[in-house]
Length: 250
Ligand code: ADP
Image 1 (cartoon, rainbow, N blue to C red):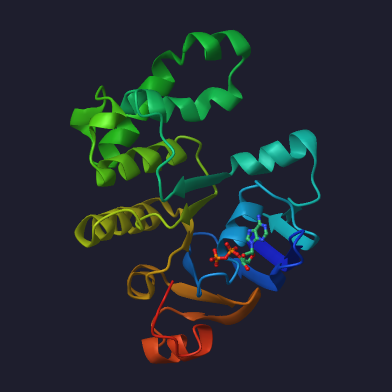
Image 2 (tube, rainbow, N blue to C red; image 1 turned 120 degrees about the horizontal axis):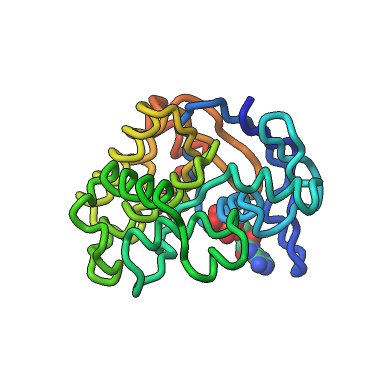
């Protein structure tokens, strides 16, 4: 298994059990969506997976290697294999698309070339190829601030791919986009998943889009996994199990 999440727990200082006991695994090349009502623990789970916070108990393994308990260099090595894209894109607005994609290389570079922005021909060619792959060949030298939301998310995808991630965490990737643009971004992610065997774990509040684009859904509710099944499961069944029949999704 590429990613194994084993009985992870997370309690915040205010005693909220954001994650009570969460276990699941994701295989190479899968497109899995994490769904669930507001407060279910989705964001906390993603923050643990991208290394922003640590869990209180349990284990996270990437390719069989413990990620949660790893420290220092070992943790950074595993972390490099995890790419993330965010709802708000998290790009440098004044920098060009190429520069934003190249920034993904900074953690691997030595001090001086990094400070001077000396990325080299090879990296630059790869950044341009990735921007072409996401449909932005004509925007390579455009400052990100001049782009639409959908185009910005495309730059963020290219930046994540620049690190050759084993898994891409997509944290509400289309929540800031209009429905048509959001669908185009998910189509792009699915194409890359199919063409390159990229593994994607998405957190989305849009059940219908999650059903359409992922192969499998993991439903969280009150910090527990209450659903783990194919995305072709009828919506009514998912709504009843994961949202308790609530109309209001979040
Ligand atoms: P979701 O992303 O599914 O909406 P979250 O992971 O954001 O859920 O939150 C799960 C629970 O943990 C909620 O009850 C939330 O209030 C709580 N929580 C999340 N982050 C913190 C924090 N930093 N401090 C205290 N409680 C938190």
